[in-house]
Length: 469
Ligand code: ADP
Ligand code: MG
Image (cartoon, rainbow, N blue to C red; front, side, top):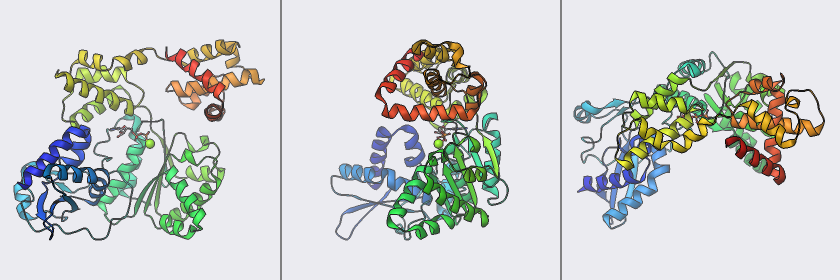
């Protein structure tokens, strides 16, 4: 009876959640155990193997699960999520050997059935765990290694194994969707697996900014200091967002110095290298550069193939190697796009009940491929923009500065960054050997102006549509 209710609930969740979410979060859970409150209302208790999962499941799925249980039972059901004891009981271990796996965090995860026959009621969770803001799904285990991330991954592994020692601060930069966020979460998760008491905090730079603003309004900087300065590992994502935020930079600098002084580790990510960061105090950027700075590059073909195969495997679907090659050859930009392509193929195969082969992949990715095939080159952008603004293509490389030329040139640089995979220095090179900071300035300037200037925005739309074909 109890297992049926839970089972039905799982079936509903399986149908409504993306498969990867369901396999990651719900499927590994032991069956919920039904008991009753003193008033006789049913309570379903589920034990979760570790506190990250507990937090995550409670926040992301708690209310939905409760609603489903209530609907299925036809009366109000309370969901009680609690931590499973750290060491599985011998009986549970014995029943679980066959399918037990050890997660990246070193915690044994038990298979679907067999565990938690009605036993002692779960202990209510007492103190709420410190918020690390880590996503436990992002680990070294499921980060595919390759030439593109070799340096960054090696350095990150090193820090996870010996924080506060070498490579401090570690600065990781690269384009969007290349795995920077994944990598720094992996460090946090690995460190916590080794040492559950480590004080780790992941923050997107924007969260840090909003913390600073809040504390500024409430005049509670001491609290802010206490919070950041007591950490063992601080992970700050996308520090380019600190641009122009002076107060934030100052607070960050303080936290930064305090943490380094007590040999806590700091890892940062950014879309560009420290010296390329615009509107960030040089005092700060030179400190960013004082440990180790490493790039993550776009993955090469073999790595893209490996990523596709690993990810489809994780979805429980085998992707033939020739299909993986086909997709990897056509989807080149970054890992996020690869994931998107994979999702399309899996969904297409499921809906059409067809097996995955190249033809199916071609059909599933029809829209994507027609865009990809029309590769946009920097030369093409320069020519199109020059035509549009009626200037000479040669002015794209010239040193001329009148606004009638400089502006279109900046627009072309902006579009080159937006529509190609070229790095800032590469783009600078293609615009007559200009410095990468010139390109960065153009990218930021045009990007900022288009949000305020509707005419410019309209022109950019036309150019983008023309270039994309
Ligand atoms: P970034 O922070 O650089 O923009 P993310 O870390 O968000 O990129 O990565 C984008 C997506 O690609 C995520 O879903 C991430 O898990 C995945 N990903 C990136 N690199 C890899 C890799 N080497 N192996 C497996 N998945 C990866
Ligand atoms: Mg990121």
